[in-house]
Structures are given as structure tokens and as C-alpha cells.
Image 1 (cartoon, rainbow, N blue to C red):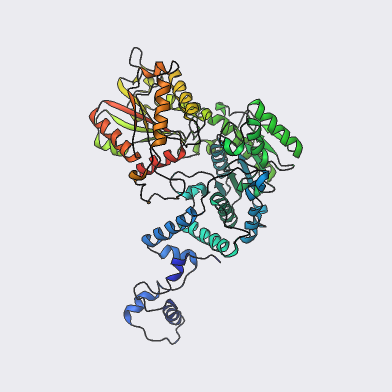
Image 2 (cartoon, helix red, strand yellow):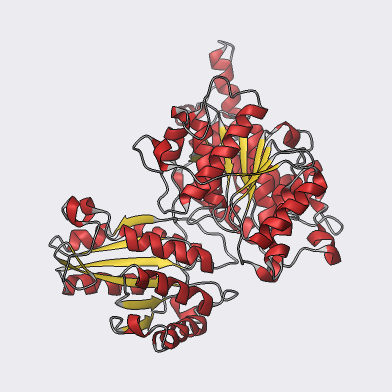
Length: 578
């Protein structure tokens, strides 16, 4: 039986009549229904009787006010926040950061028998694993299966990490499963078996939700690494996938591609088929070595041939998505075959079933190659100008290059947004300013932040140079701190961080890295267009400044690339939605 929060359990009296226990009112209702004698009740209490009947926990949540639900949800987020710790490297010296504790948690939550029943697709990688999982889920949902999708991180709300049939789990369901897991773990953990850390709890919660909701397929994205990741308690997945590998989280995964690939290959299981995409030679050798040791049939998934889409487009934009969608097709095909559901579907290099094409074209993932017009700015400035945000959570050198290619293409490719004629949007107007498209002035502005463990001298030059190669030069660069903080889980309704408490030393470091590159010989061609760079103490102030700039120059289209951090992208989306 699921347990409500302490606050919910304490509400055992009628909300309108605190002195009238629910049990009395419920007893009166039951006697009236069965036509038996009942005690006389005050008329005002009779009006409360039916609403106060004790109901199953799922119905109790629906009857509560929005305010009570919000309080309960914030309480759950506070509990989650208490589990956040700094990441440490999981290796032999600490037994994989005490990875074996995960199996104790499975026993406590009665998931030992449930997880082997899940038909899991397990995906690791440096770049593209979230997109691959999203494509895979969409394909199998279009094939008629009940899907569960677990991804990370979330952008605005933690419930984004848990999707059932393509939709994030409702607050009611989240709270039911959350408190059930939380109370069990609080009761059974202690000095020897402490409460699980943040991501481990979320992975356990995902397994609980997917098993209880009886999904046909559970697509699980690895959080970090693979070998010691919380999702790796799955002993017998149906198929495994490794997306593109590169240098990221090196302080945890290792300093070479071979070390990083070895950690990712930790999700391989003996005899379980696995697919990967074309990799750097060093990384591919590491994957092949691990696969050979375990007898894993490792195969290469080729990028999607655009001709197979039947004149439709991928739901996720960017040329790198052809690589991710090719991997998703392979994983989906093997899952269907291994579970006996392939039936009469014809899947080969020359054709795809309609369900696959529909799934690929309908896939959606916020914060990756996403275009968001500023509706507030457009309302205030209905003339020629406007403000549009181009959001991409790229945060590695390789993904920065992919992001720059997408952005350079996207600012020319959307005539419906900017009122340009279709034949004008593919190329810059001959003889015009390099940032003038379709007869209008366009200004490209960079809004950037990244984690302090990343090297801006690797990220920014890759972004600037790739944009420059495609004829795009930034008019200005803006550096801001994230609104969200690492040690606090928030929701759309949570109050923003107080700007006065923000340390801007890292943003000033980013600004210096930008200016040093611009004044170097390598960045001199870009510096001729870029006026300067700015640091704002908060994101809302930066957005306010952008909107005011558009108001002052009504003939200019301002196209803002937001990148460097998924947290920053989530903060921008939160402000847009609020």
C-alpha cells in the first residue's frame, strides 16, 4: 500500500469541521447508503460527509486543493535536495562508490523480482544518449507499446525524467511513488546502509514507477559513465547502446578516450546484443575489447539515410541527429526481434515501417536544438523586430561544434517565424551585411554559462570558429550565472535565486576567456563584428536587457544562442513559461 506524506497523513479530520473525525462522517455515510440506523448529524456536517469518506490514496490526492498539492510537492523536492552530494570518482578504491548498496536498496523497495521482469533498453554515451533514448521511445510507442523513459538531467521539473507513453509522470503519481519509496528507505536505512544519493534515488524511483505501471519497455539512459551508474543494476537488458563518445566528466571517468569508453562499456552484459555508432579509433578499440571479453555481439549502427523518412523530417533538429536516430532504429529493431514483436515489419537499409518513420518525426526533447520566440517581447514590439532564443544544452567541445552548425543553419531556415520568403532563407543575401538576412538586420548574440569543471578555452573557440566558418559572427556575448543551483531541486513555481548572493567570479573568467580569444590572431576575424561582452548578475536582468534592446531597435531581429549548460537552458525555459 502506498503511503502519503506526513502532512497528508495528519489531515484525518474534516477540513471544514476540524473537530469532526473523518471516521465518524464515513460511518454515517455508509449507514445511510445501506439504509441502516445512523446517528443524527448536524446538517452542516452532512454536507461534508461524502467528501470526507476515506478513499484510496490515488483519489485522496485528487481531492486535495492545488495549494496542498503544491506544498506536498515542494516537501518532496526538499527531501530530494537533502540527498544531493558532490560527485566522486567511482573506482576500485571505494568499491565503485559503494555500488553494492544499490542491491540493498532494491531489497528494501521490493524491486529484486520486478527489475528482471522489465524489458530494458540501456543506453550510455557522452553525446546524444538522451536523443537516442527519445527517438527509441517514440518509435516503440508508435508501434503500439506502453513505454517508460528515464532520462537526465531535467530542465525545469524533476518529473521530466520519468515519462510514461511519452508524457512526464503526473504530480499525483510522482508523489504516490515518491513517498512510498522515501518512507521505506527512511525506515530501513541507517549507519551501515545510508540513504541513497540523489541520482541513485531517482533511478530506484524510475524502476518502481515502470514496474508498478507495467510498461512494455523501459528505456533507461545512463546518468554518468556506465559501470557504476545506478541504472546498471539491470542484469539482463534486452539490448544495450553506446552513443557518441568524447571527453567529458574526465575528473570522474578518466583522462583518455580508452578510459572513458571502458566506463561506458560497463553496461555490456554477457550475451546481450549491443550497438554503437562510429567512434574515434581509441574509443572503438576499448568497446570492442570489452565486448569480446563478455561475448557481446557488438555491431555498428549507421547514420539514418534521409531518404527513408519519406519526405518527413526528424523531430529533433541538427545533422548529428541522423547518427542518434540510426542508433535508435537499431535498438528498436533488436528489441522488437528479441521480444517476439517484430512480426511482419520490414526493416532494412532500403525501407522503414511507417511506425518507425512516425516515431522519428514525432520525437520531442526540450533544450536540444530548440527554437523559442519570446512571446512577451513580440507582444511589446509588434513591428519588424523581435527576439528569438535558440536553445541547445551543448557542453563539450564536440557538441559545441554540432550546436554551432545547427544554429548557423537554423537562423536562415525558418521563414515562417521571421516573415522571410522561402527562396531567401537558404543563403545570405548577396552583397548584404553578413548578419543581414532577407532584407532585415539580424543580430546574433551568445548567452553562455558552463560548469566550472569545464574549460572555456576548449568550448568557446570551437563554437566561435564553427559559426565563423558558416558566416555567422556574434554581435555580443553575455555571461550569466545559472538561476538553478546544484544543491536544490526546484519546480516551475519555486522562487528564483537571490542575485545578491551570486558569486560572479566564474562568469568574469568566462568573459576573460572570450575576450582573450577575440583579441588573439585566431579570433581576429570575429572581433571586427563583436562589439563587446557583458556579465549580468542574474538571468532575468539579462533577458530584460535583451528585450529593452529590441524595443530600441525595432527593425532588428535578435537571435540569441543559449548554450554551454543544460541548467542555463532550463532556466531560460522556466522564465519563458513563467
